[in-house]
Amino acid sequence: MTRSNLMLPLLPPLALAAALLAGCASPDPRYYTLAQGPDATVPAAGQAVTPARAAQAQPVWIEVAPVRVPERLNRPQLVVRDGKDGGELKLLDLSRWSAPLPDELRDALSQQLQARLGAVDTYQQGLSEVEPVYRITTEVVRLDAEVGQRAGAVINWTVRRLPDGKVNAGRTQAELPAPGAVDGVVAAYRQIVANTAADIAAGVESLRR
Image 1 (cartoon, rainbow, N blue to C red):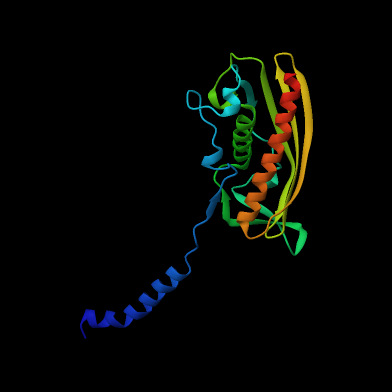
Image 2 (cartoon, rainbow, N blue to C red):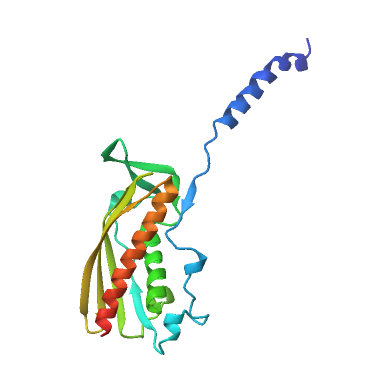
């Protein structure tokens, strides 16, 4: 019997194994962002300005620091509560943030605040010789969701006007429905960011009076 004839019986099992391996391949993860999309993008310096910014000769200078989040949430995957037992957390391996969560939250808040206030974020632009600057710090106390059910948050924030150091602080709390799959959770989180930005913007405006 020739060598080629000896190898023939091995071909079907090898082909079967290859097919099984292909069938068991893991699906690619989906990546999510808290940014609101192109319609809400705030123009960079030198580009077309929003109506709010055009209405004022001097822009509002803000500095949005990275958001502090609990370590259990600071992961690439979305972290949700298990619907079977609200005390258990579950990592969604196939649903991930497009950037570290502190950066996702910071960038989304900055986008919202620039649009609401007609502001320029000095943290993004690398500006240091401007004043007054409204330094904004935020801390996520709670951010959780049950897929297909709800999403909620408690976020503490502080606005400090520099150089005089005058402070305005507050807390944003929200409980929103999150119907559907993971997309519903992300949509609810975006609304929570928008609510937080609205509260912070009001805090900035109170310091400007």
